Length: 426
Length: 182
Image 1: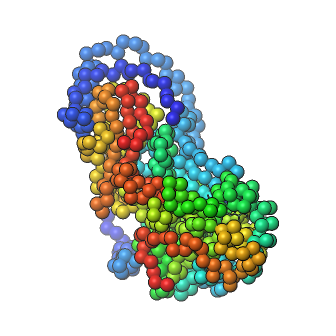
Image 2: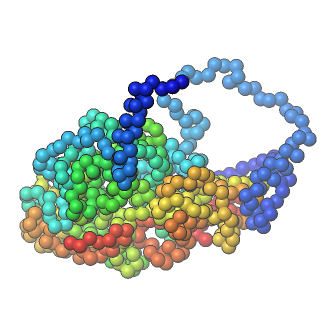
Image 3: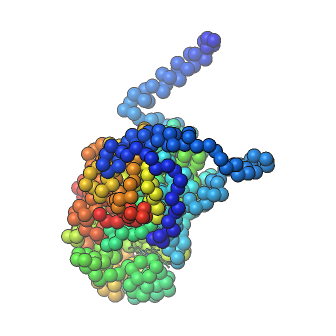
């Protein structure tokens, strides 16, 4: 991490009522703080003249066909970790530490591609459904757009997200560049079950073999029960048609399960008795354990949370802060998120942004009075199935460090007395 | 204010048409637009290749020929004899346990058919899908020979490839789905 220069102390009055909780965590602290602020400011007068505001006197920019973020937000970008020899092979990470709420802007949704983003003319794309079915069927995108559509919010998380957590030393980078192979969108599409019913699934079928139309023809197997439960043939993301890097014109949404199953540029579904044992379900997306055996078909993304604001690299000033973060679980809804500022000795429940939806990012927030003490900030999520996010030591005791995938341990940020935040194992 | 009667009836009719679909266990009926295709498998660029060999094409090759394919098409990213490069090492000869486990094709991959399938659809990354079936069989044979599971002159084809037993064949435990009986 490149440590930033300390920021100057702001001139906000510090006469804020301390939180009732000795750790400074108090859900009512903002209310009290607000009152204190009012009291301190009404006595003074606005002395300095306002600086000139030229935009009050100059006509603004013309209308645009497609809006872009403010020029001043240009630092809010995906961070790309490419393979230098094959630039379309790699990852770009969602800057979770720059975002709020639960929706990831489509242009910031993380990417994991194996050999680049194909540019597919929608009218040339077909979805083929065949194998153990009564009939082999082919669908155009125009066909699919006529089917009954369903919409839901869902996160997609790469099975390899947060893999730096297995490292011996904590990697010093911002929250999103450690955990941003996860993003959350509103997805609209045709229920996969509708299309499978039309093809007529044979009684002996147990699996779907999925294939994408990219330059590795990415293939992977999905159990039939999940396919008929809640998968969507997604055509729209956040209200508009999919972005190319998210699978335009068609991708599969497999709510709560490993990102690799959410096949982009989906072109083929083959019903079969057994998994095809593709490279991406044998060599990769399996987790080698200390005993030399590997976990395979670990589909569900475990319960996870992290504090996104503040994020490593930030420098805090004393006073009232809001700790903000994201939690999600492939098993269902988030039930609660607790925050600790003393490395896990005591925990306080954070407020969850509503509605809390299954297999969806859940935003949590909690006010905190920082009085200048060294602190270790952690969040711990529990989902409705009762799964509790584990401490790192526990996860590693169970799984070793060579599994690479499915790292969901509690994340710790350490605050030193200068207010500098860093990533720690604690 | 009141809705013209004919339209009211139309709405009612629509509702009655839609209701049975919603009632039948949440099934959502579509307009049945799928075009029925005959003999689909033959037209696929990459038919699925299963561990029992279903889907393997005609053709064959051995490690001697495969080495030539490998040296020309694969070393740039996977190093000589699969020992590493930007595309990752393919052959490790290392352990799967201990402080530095080192999984690769030779010691970790459960099925030889996967090697054929992935190479055919994805490699070489700069020109995927350009190797002939004979070249894919040959380069697969070369990597299997480096893995120590076949001899240099063993002919690898649709018959012999699925019979190869990879050393880590039983090294995997299924987690989120029960293993279906074979």
